[in-house]
Length: 352
Image (cartoon, rainbow, N blue to C red; front, side):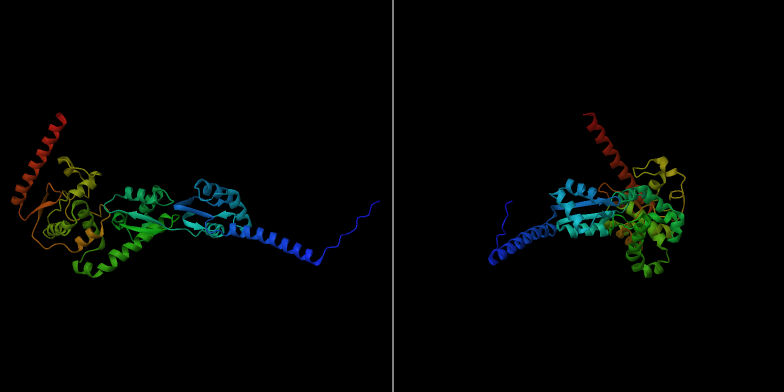
């Protein structure tokens, strides 16, 4: 039997061995550390928006990130997530801009620290169009938001009648979270309405002895009537003159609302029996017909002081104003002649 003899190591060899082991361990650890805390581990040259509809596990998230080209090495992402302990992530909207370390990004999603989205409500819209536009920018659907806007129990808590709601959908761009619920987003709009419309104009409302809803109703008619911002105060003055004299408003936009379409009105449209038809019913209609802009609201609050009672459209999109009915008839005839001329030109073009 052959006996192997133990070869003694010198002190220098032992030190070298320990240093080599330490260096290998250090390099492995440094490599892992640099990958784990690489500030460009999840990155993109352009802003990328990620929407998680529900609670998401790491495998599903890894696929989303890989499909969006936000990670180059899917296996490394799974390794990092396991090492860091991030395995489940909350629903929401998350934005990748520049770069993140694995820990910074995964912890953000795991804690549900969302990036806000911007939701824009335009003026002069119908309830359905507003509900659709809002829903397209948030997680809930348009039906859910429309139900909120017509929920009488919820509206009663907000001190609103269903007929008032459209006027309170204040046009603005709102910063909110994608996962906001319909009721909370509506309350967000109401907070902005209070801050931008009600609070600054309390004194003016007292001076006019008018309610917020009356001002909104007139402003909503101005919103649809005026093509030019510069004309709004003049149109407002005309409508207030009619109201003060007990005349019917005879505002075409209220007939559009009554027939349910914004189009050129026909003779029979003016005979539509509807409480909003101001050709048939005196005073302001029961509520706003659309959501007025700040400019229209200010015009309703601060009408131009004049004696005009009549107006008719002009070819340039503005209006011709008159103090007497006789003057109004002459201007209306000019408008009809211009319209007839346009029809003749169009028929001639179509026949060529």
